[in-house]
Length: 365
Image 1 (cartoon, rainbow, N blue to C red):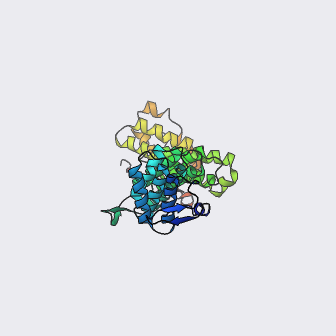
Image 2: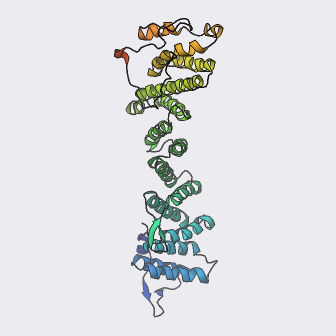
Image 3: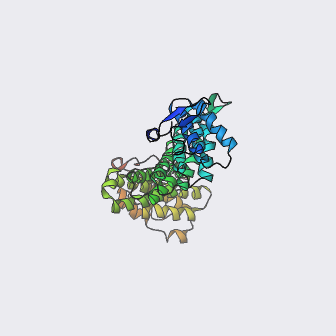
């Protein structure tokens, strides 16, 4: 999952292992004692001896709490712990670097290590329980790490990758409102990213998926429509690829169905005036939808329950029905010869998108 850059070894001078298990430079004046200890610990790690590297790093950190190479030693110990399979313990060392030594050379490397661990946790790696069994869910740790990386190194490629991985994390787990927020933030922060088209497409998908049906809030639908209309202007090729025309038709149908569901609810509680207002929104704002045809079927029942004076001021639903269906509807609310307007078989089209089924109450007999 990690380790240290082996190219550092290529830049070092020749050392010899002394009798006290310490590496001695041929020219002692070139490297100070602290630097030699860091190189000693790193070499143990590079040679596949993480336990020894951890012991050397811990010995220095315990003996010199204010040592000049403390960030480097923390990094070595964290890398050794990762190699030993204790990546969660390693996070404590990496966090110590990012919080206390942001100006050190180990700062960015520590964030890179945290990103690798966060990705592993996001992909399903579990934390150890009692140091042995990987049974603890680490999804919360993944989210926290990905957020911290963006806060600590804003504008960097690492922060960009962390932002996209966080958004994908929410998307993969069907947390669509969180995914939409994360993709939206990515679009704002990284408009020139190579992943910008993916972010915009996923943003629209997240908005649409956050809509739960006509009985629930439709904010996601409206946000998706706004984004699609903007996409058709700014990036017509991407809009065509995601099928913006078909998606807008589906959104229009779902919004109309929500208005119709609201109208039916008002009718069920004995408020035909409010029901007619929502019915009017369906047929006037969304006339090309299947929901508009269902609304015209329901119109006679609503008008029949309204006061005659108010019903006389409503739109001519009979004319609308004739225009859309070629069928007759009662002009006066008191006349119920045909309380529901039949839909011709040739025009019985299913909605473009699955919507929650709405059962119209039976007409009064």
